[in-house]
Length: 394
Image 1 (cartoon, helix red, strand yellow):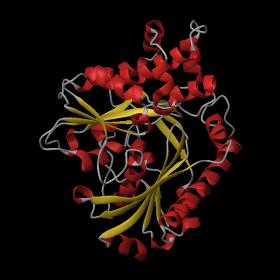
Image 2 (cartoon, helix red, strand yellow):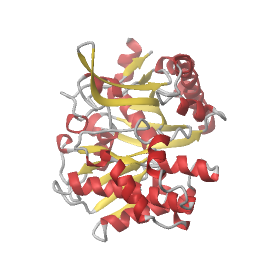
Image 3 (cartoon, helix red, strand yellow):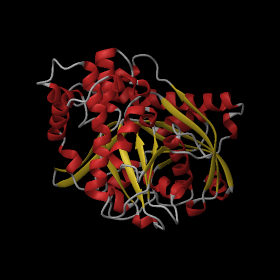
Image 4 (cartoon, one colour):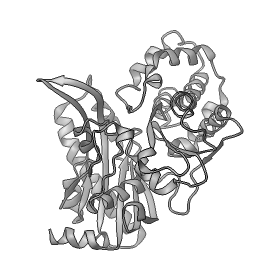
């Protein structure tokens, strides 16, 4: 406990943020120097790297993300295996940067989401929402010797929230403006948007998942071209938009019309969703299919903005991060939908890279937890109150 008190009072900390998203590409690892906490937080990314999962692990994780193919023994073992891999990533990050893991004050880990059930369900007379991120933070803390904070989503859900998105707190700390109405869009496996009107307070923040990000595109790239993803959107750029298929996807996806707070994941956007959409389009060119689904990612973002956010304020900037920001077709489609009055650009800051945002975010979250600050935003998640999130593992 004395170590925690010293850590809490330390003005400048070296913190590692660890993240693996819905795309299951590997472990994003960021070394961040953090000074202060809360609204006075100042930070700078010192080093970032992505460490790939061992061959075949992505497929095993995806298999155990769906109820039809999951296995309780696999999930139990994966919880420890991914914890070990996250710990190794933290140690490797330090080695690659040229310091010892013993110099690290704190680790913040998102873990690997395998199932997210934000819709309320009655179970034995109780209303339950649930989520599961594996890669137990206790494993990380014991193998690194560093205090680790993880399982950030659970506390918000316990108070009736969706447990997601959590990044909007970080967006507010980092990108709020007194002069500009802007939105932050992160496109990982799932796309999520944060609205920051000028002069916004934390209670003004609105954010939610807009729908699929790269998740469906990645599945299609693997199916038709045996590629992990559509690099730079080259496949999408080489095909033609099929309006009939686009209309079919819109009809199938009731999520984009659902009122916030809302969050989603692989439970909705998966092989079954693709099969339902493509049932009458089997003869369509694979390139045209990828073009159309990529277009839908951008359309879903804009549709949500028009339906739920524009009435609050009209943005002049859309700052995009995550793997999807490297997809030139998505970026062009976003600019087309939002029009000339909105500047659609990648997140540009000297504090972090466009790919490291979420890893940096969870380093900041660990610091906030240790400092006793709530990071959930009830207007975003639907929780009954603000609360400190995360489990502290010694």
